[in-house]
Length: 175
Image (tube, rainbow, N blue to C red; front, top):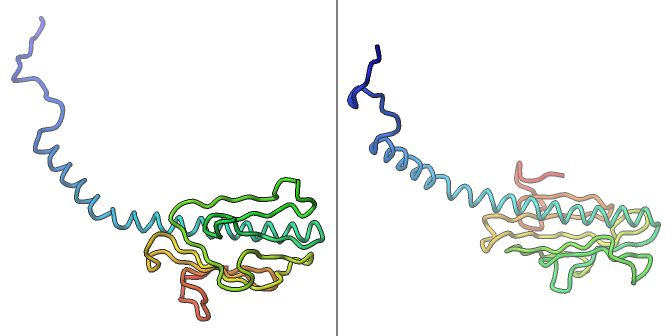
């Protein structure tokens, strides 16, 4: 014996309009709260990435100087440090660069000390002059600013504040 179900006794699947509207309102409220934090998160990540790129370039120039047993420099691009940097091949001008980095986006990098257009490492891995690089992401320096300090001995220190940082803020600096 077959039993037929009438329309009224069927199980209904899905959401009601009221349930759907409650979910939409909750998602809108959460997005309104999260958006400013997400914007700051993006600025912080761009600052961390840019400082890491510059730190890697400085380390590469230093290691090339030691490996080749000759002075090697990290040079800013023709449009300044904010546009990028390169390590020319110290063996010959017609050979490709050891490193060539193009920087994009709303990032400002200024070299505070030492010769403005380059950083040179000796064959012993020491910098010929100390340097401070101030990195600002976005139009507001108070939101995402960092300082990468290169010491004469070739070691680097990064701090999440403006250059120079004689007395770093707690928990804002790393080696």
